[in-house]
Length: 311
Image 1 (cartoon, rainbow, N blue to C red):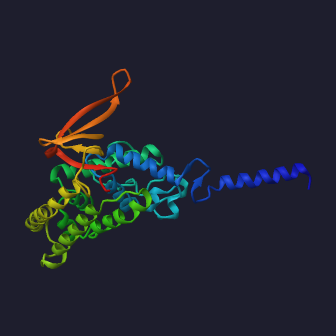
Image 2: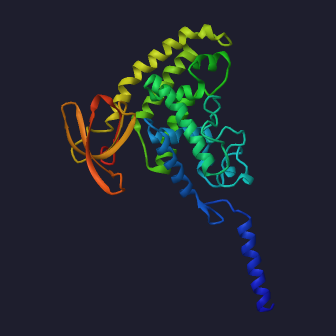
Image 3: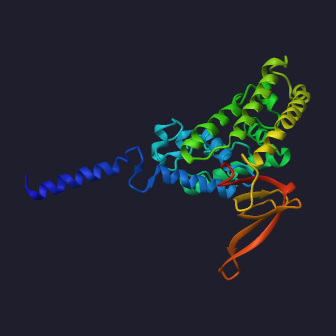
């Protein structure tokens, strides 16, 4: 074999390997699983509002399967197509968060098989979750109604639609997939979701509520379920605001304030008189780096987390 023939053979092998788009950690050396996972996390952080990032990631895992987080999603879930590439969306057209509600579906833009399509799907999914959260001030009810709508008993019992174990399924992903993939966890929220599933199961299986009835039949039971979920989970959700210990001066924290409808990040400088004061970093109108103080009323805080609150 001549030297020229050897070079041609080697080039053919390399070309074949590149064109095959082999599954695993890279495709054509353009994108890795980890890069895609971090991009998804960034999108969630941009759109989650008052929602915990861990919760949204767990819902993406539930709705879009594990394939949503891999560049070869078709090797994880059959509803992805290899021909759609590393940013493939589920083939049913509802995106990785399965936004089927007509008021939110593709409201931010089309669910194309690229990074922008993922961002649109996550934006719409978060907005639909936040619509429920703003009405009920409850993560558990927001997750439940994301799957079944606000008439969840009519959905599950009247129409026999949806996933009756949705809350526990999301809790499982919050316990396993999210910590293993992102190193993030919220055990209080896991317990709240499982408690919510237990309350829901009581209505689905133990109260003698009939199946196949009209929406009016279920309305009285729905009110009872809503109240029971909210009352039982209210204290657990408030406890999770403070993570595993009370924040202290010097902690670097991220605070979502319901009063401002915004998230603020900085180092705690003072706690007292119903306020938490933090030192924030930012830029002035000329683009120069600056630091400034901000005080936030404790009663307005919806979520609070930080690197050192779990220690």
